[in-house]
Length: 214
Length: 116
Image 1 (tube, each protein chain N blue to C red):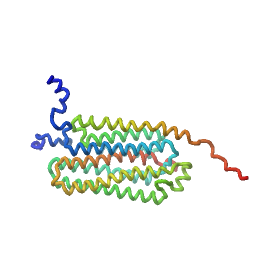
Image 2: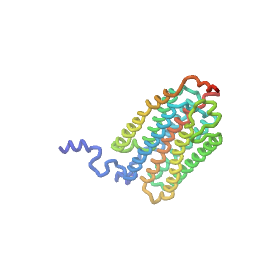
Image 3: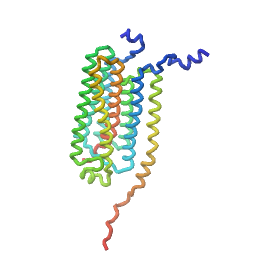
Image 4: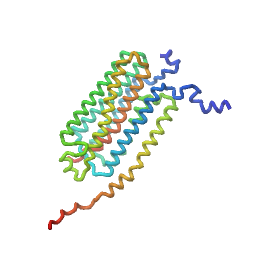
């Protein structure tokens, strides 16, 4: 009997922490699960509309794709600085951890600024959530104005997450002496998740909408 | 470090060197994706390769940056399969998407109405 029970609970070991993570970390993982379903639904909705409509593919390789690649590089690098922050925090080097966290938040803010420049440019061209610029509508006859709705909806939702993440990181940086290592790690989980979402948004929204015409 | 590890509270694993090499791999995959955008493949190949590369990138981020590889298997099995199945279930909408595409009028543009 005992061996059977041990076989079932062997990995758990009968302790009170079946996941060997704190309740906060488990909570963050559950939040990440629900949030990734939110983004999946948004991206699937985009794919649904794209497959059932004539879809404009307006992004020129230069400057649009090059610009969004730089944004991707900034966000990827911010993930690396966050990893360094968590790594420093694990070694109880709190002031180093604080510097890396602030560097992460600065890179996140850079991403937002670059994104706002891009939005401003597109809005200037005449793109809005429910209307295409005239040149696009002429170039892709019959194309749906929902391009703007999906573009601003998905990138806006992502940018909101980056913005929230920056505030979260600054609070963690300010309180790093009072917080446990795991709390720093949890803020890292959130930040990497935001980066992960961009790894799907960037190819689906930008790279699949490269303008192949000259 | 060892004093912390004894409590089972701290289980940080992975060196900075490992994380930097993961980051380099993420950059390489992103560069590859951007290159595909530059050479203009047909959209169906583009979609397949891009999704494949993005899933690899997501797996690298989750496994190393988010430390899931160093967590207990219990946690991994709680998070990953449910999420993958739920996301795959969203694909159920696509037949309807193709249906509404096929419902669209695809013939020549209708002639202008005659004036009486």
